[in-house]
Image 1: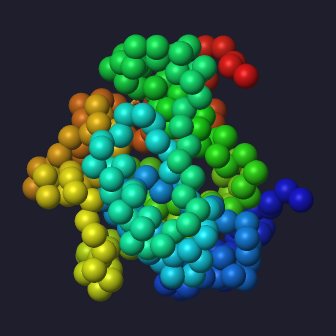
Image 2 (image 1 turned 120 degrees about the vertical axis):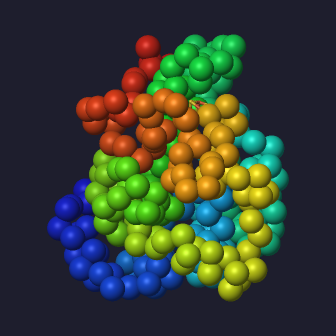
Length: 246
Ligand code: SF4
């Protein structure tokens, strides 16, 4: 049955004052048992959400989009967290080879058309990974700014319920959680990377800069597109592939 905005509104009301841990436990055990996926970049803040989910269900379906352009440090960090948290169901989803051949045969599309590169390497794999998923958890936070500034806990996006348990958490909350549970940091944090995406499109940030200032630095782009509805107008809308590849 299609998910309605009314259902989403009811969830926002139900969990209005709930802590992120209570939101995660509630949706995994009461509201949608066995139906929830968690999408993680295994970036600098990802350990918090992954730890919260693992505390409830270590077999939760975790989707990791491996664009083929990630830092080696991110892959190694993913492996480390998987083992440390006991996550048993991490799905690494790669771009379609045929779509890569068509859109990015030389692997330099990021420097020519970042939106198309993100479509090929992130958005299409994500759409495929979530094809049969009705509810998914995202790690977005309001303090990241931009489109993320006024995040609701629950959203209806392209027919799915998207849950943002950390929507209202700030950086000190995350730091405290890392400390409380002795979670390992992404290895690039010590080099000044506060947010980590693909290697060609990420730089360290200077003191006082926004967390995501190092993503697509110098370009009019702040999101890869996996958090934006398809067809949404504006600079950050996602371009379709030139022709469909089966
Ligand atoms: S972040 Fe950069 S390399 Fe990664 S998919 Fe987007 S444009 Fe391509």
